[in-house]
Length: 209
Image (cartoon, rainbow, N blue to C red; front, top):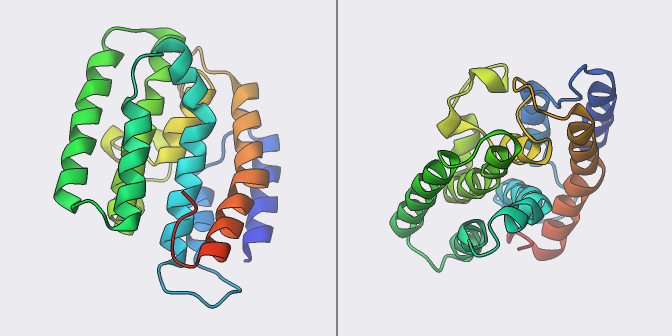
C-alpha cells in the first residue's frame, strides 16, 4: 500500500476506534512506508523522514511542557541533540549519555506529579525517544508487541508518548481524553506525515530539523 492509502486507513481507524487511537500495528506500516520515495536520494531518506516526523510530534506537545515547567529546557535540549546527531556533529556515546540523563530527570519529575500533570512529563520522554531514533533506525523495531500497553515503557515510540501527553494520558488511564487523541492523530496523519515527507524530499537525506 502507498503512504496515501495507509493514511486514509489510519483516518478511518481513529474515527471508528472507541479510544480514537492509531494502533501500533498501523503506525509500524506507516513508518515502513516512509522509505518509499519519488525523488533520487540516499538510502537514509526513510530514517530522516521518521526522525523529522518524531520531532514534529514533540514540537506539537512542547507547549504543554512549557506551561507546567517553564524553566525546564530538557525536551528542547534533547531536540538539539537530535539535530546534532543527524548532522553528525555529536558522538553517539555522548548523545546516548544525554538521553539517559534526561530520562532519569523525567523519572524524577514524574514522581512529583499525578494525573494530567504527570502525563505532561511524557513530552520529555518523547524527546528522549527521538534521540534514540536518531541514533538508530532499529529503535522502532526493538519490540514485537501488538499494542502499546504491552510495550516496555523504555521502548515506547516517540509518537505514543506525544499522543499520550496531548490526550492527558494513555488509553488505559482513566483521565485520558479520547477527543484530544483524535485531534492529535488526525493532525499526525493529515499534516505531520506530509510535512516529514516534503521536508526531507527537499533536503535529500537530511531531516528537516
